[in-house]
Amino acid sequence: MKLTLHHVNLSTDKVAEMDGFYREVLGLHPETSGLPTLEKTKGYAGDVSFLTDGVIQTHIAERDVLAGFKTGHIVNAVARGHIAYRTDDLDAFKKHLDDQGVPYSDWGHAAVAGWRQIFFYDPDGNVIEVHQVVDD
Figure (spheres, rainbow, N blue to C red):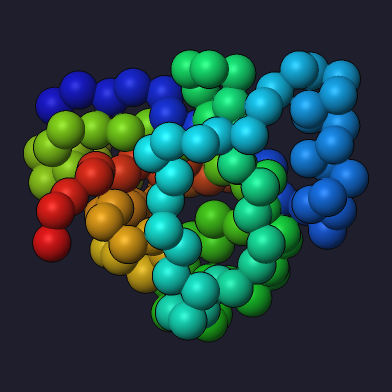
């Protein structure tokens, strides 16, 4: 079970303004490959800008404090944002969390087609995503 940093998600009410800032000030550019297919009919229909430095993606997502309620999940990944890691074996990672006593919310494919996602909190309340790309 390998983890690699995949993206940082920033939740905001100013997607366009944040997109411009991260492009102009930090020199990020639009991500053109490996973009997730958002499942906008399953509870979260916000606008998202996908930027990259060439290695790590930055997802600038429209804040939705009710996304957890709309999708039936305890952890809301777009209320405050999150950091995301990609794994090659999500089931093994879930077992690892179970063994550590860390509760998580299994979003499955609720937000992104082709990705299995789980979300959990670190000790300070920051949201962490771990996902695996799958062919369904």
